[in-house]
Image (cartoon, rainbow, N blue to C red; front, side, top):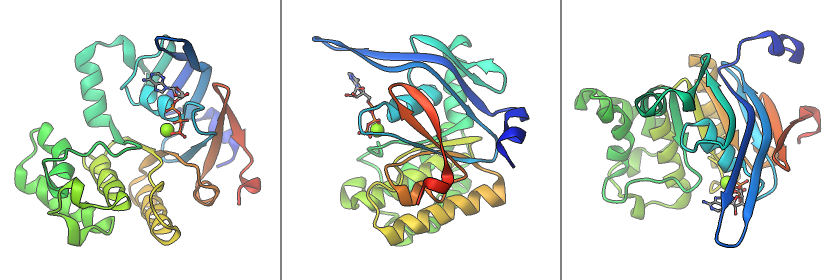
Length: 239
Ligand SMILES: Nc1ncnc2c1ncn2[C@@H]1O[C@H](COP(=O)(O)OP(=O)(O)OP(=O)(O)O)[C@@H](O)[C@H]1O
Ligand SMILES: [Mg+2]
């Protein structure tokens, strides 16, 4: 699909003129300012940018975790932050999968239990949740570590468990913050291959934040966040 076709297609989620800043004791940090972004169904979109530019902030705002001071996040035609808490809760649980930059796995539960949680929150049967969690953990190469607690996993292993958890409820959109940040080239390529396969087989939409040129080069479209604004990156220039 070329860019002109894309512009005519309905998007899955859209940021419209979003402002987000943080107020600390000493200063106000303006992170996103009048930020616009469209994510189209079935694409694997990359977001790159310097450390501290606001990539994680943008994912949190898109994923219904952090309300912007100004602007709208439109999902399936609705401004998610205008619908009330129960809508937001459902939006996060049913429509969005989130892979946090620092994983956020529950330390007192095994990898398997961590992956099962999103389904249990939706009152799915334990046996069904377990079966899918085991399948996903095998897919991300964690078959032999399912019963380890997060503290007994390496950084890359924790990251793969977090990806499996994010995919648990077959979300419309998976937002992943540096999902290959702790992986070597081989493991990173495998994970991107899995993401590409899920994208192809299930039309799963992904937004991936990455620092890796190699990862960015394997995605459909890449945007760069600079000074709170999102700019297209010419894929042919990404190695
Ligand atoms: N809760 C917070 N309170 C105050 N400042 C914050 C908070 N969270 C983030 N920031 C600041 O906002 C800016 C954007 O942070 P963010 O985590 O979105 O950056 P990033 O692009 O994801 O960086 P990295 O590539 O290092 O993960 C940074 O300067 C950061 O210090
Ligand atoms: Mg970040």
